[in-house]
Length: 280
Image (cartoon, rainbow, N blue to C red; front, side, top):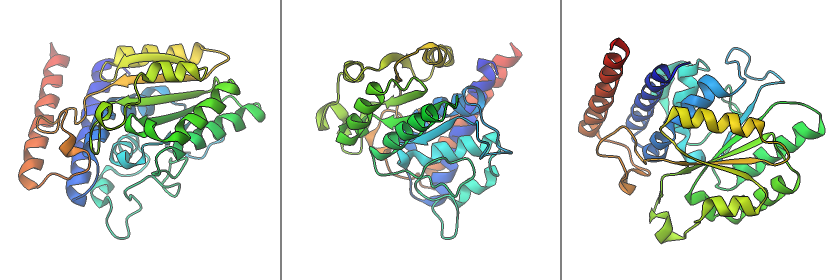
């Protein structure tokens, strides 16, 4: 898939995020939007997956360790064909299978997550299991930068590095904002790259919204042997929605009807600009 197609897909994913959270009147749009390009690349290009056979044994695994950004994961999965896009409007509603955090009863979800620090630990276990069983699937997990304040993250990292789990790729969404404000003011995890390197990770730093950099990073990760990889992606919280960008206020708040209209107009303009780019 070329970059223009990926940008269009990512914009659709962002529309799904905003629509789902607006419909639920609750949720976490900011961190879902910052990770939308990465979700898109993982599900449309990088991972060996099949929406028609979500439990196939040789599939790559993905664990959303920052489980509160489930709207981003759900939107990517819906657009990829795991379940109807229309079901995104049932987010967090009574009786819906799409609740506030990922759960394994959802087709294509490999691990229930939400308690920060635990998802990456599960991903490390999956990667070790693959090694012990001599299976060649890869395991991907995405963490929030605020999540790095959890001690369990570093226990998992120490174990992964010690066991040389080169089938594991940890992705850190470094948008520099968590629920209470900038991460360097709340409880700084910086320097993120040096910390993972200290635990015997190969570290790659990229722009989270540049598909060339994302593609190159995953290629480098696959080619790295004898150690796990950590991709630190510098992102913009709320990316794509003007009034949400780089605003901590939208960590965990749904837009009202008027705000939803503005957000969708922003994303419709991006869609129109991408169409013009394709015709140029």
